[in-house]
Amino acid sequence: MTRWPLRLLAAASTPVLVLTGCNHAGERPDASPRNCRTLAADPGWYGDNRQRIDAMINRLGHCGNTGSVAAGAPLALFDWDNTMVLNDVGSATFFWMINNSKVRQPAGGNWSTTSTYLTPEAAAALAAACDGLAAPGQPLPTGSDIGCADELVTIYTRHETRSGATAFTGYNHRRIQPVDAWAAQLLAGWTDAEITGFATAARAQNLGAAEGSGQTVGSTRQPGWVRYYPQMRDLAGTLQANGFDVRIISASAEPVVRVWATDIGIAEDHVMGVRTDHDGDVLTSRLAQCGGEPSIPFNEGKRCRINEQVFGVRGAAAFQQLPGQRRQVFAAGDSDGDVTFITDATALRLVLNRNQIELMCRAYANADGNWMVNPIFGKPLPMSTPYPCATQGFDEPAGGHAPLRQADGTVVADQVDRVH
Image (cartoon, rainbow, N blue to C red; front, side, top):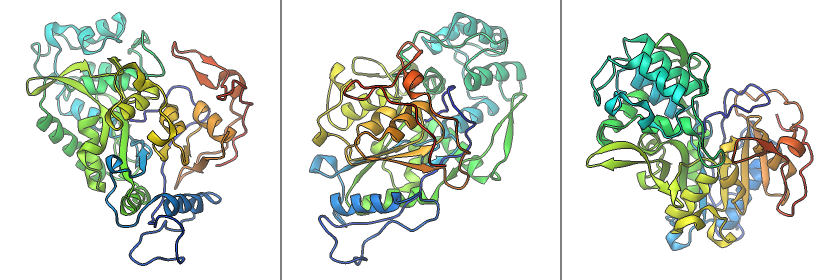
């Protein structure tokens, strides 16, 4: 899920990416090879971004081949929320579950069991709002009980209780986004098939809603619609047509993202999202591990999951950058939670400009010339104030901010927002 981190320089709204294409290995024999898809010309592309992607496809792909990393195909990775679609499918499913009373009362009524990062204040607030409404393990009536619904929604959307107390603490800010983990952990007690049904219903509701519409969840107003970007659908198909192995890496719950990704031709086993352990047929609130620790696909956690699932690396080594020949050639994303896996791409890195400090600092510094910045398609954000890369460009594991440094240790200078 690419939820929007709290640290933004400008109000973000919509992200999108655009493309279409095909290729041959080596040089193209002509400008428009038969039976091949090429990147579609589109005014939303900034500068020569489309031409650069086209050239990469032409250089690295094989028109008509079936792409598999195991067989040596180049790997292309995409964030999902606000990169492949406008708005957030994890949020869409969470709000649907609240309105349809699908969140279960935790065992023993102890909300701390739903997340090890939930503060005592947040657990107490949830207990005060929701206890007595359902027996342990049973669905809460959040579709009708506004108080319980509002506490859940406030913690999810604002990372704090209704009284303003911090909701999550004690996590590595480069490996965990606790609210994204929590959205997956609150699926506990349901089977995969049931969750697929919830996500399918939420998808239908959000695709059917008018663009720009909201919905009432508890007493709050929340976004009520999601749209696929046709350009991104075309991009995924174009890369696949040219023999690329195309996969999704998201901080939304994996069963949810699978429902959305299959519609654009991404197989279920090519979707990487937040996973929780099973107890028999039902999901639990225990986060799955990566690199020997509880982890989700967020920032460094995305690298871990890719290295583990795609390249077979086990243990703490999965958090380390692999040699270039064992990494993705292309990556695209929009937020600071995508920094690490985008940086790992060896050929091109596409960043959708949502004014995220660390990501934009790295992209504009463009140390090796392989970064591309594109405005949000359809509704670009206004120019941001300069990014404070030299003092606040790096998100520290403990939650603070430090100077952003290049691989050689030099500090990245503050960057002007040039692509908008």
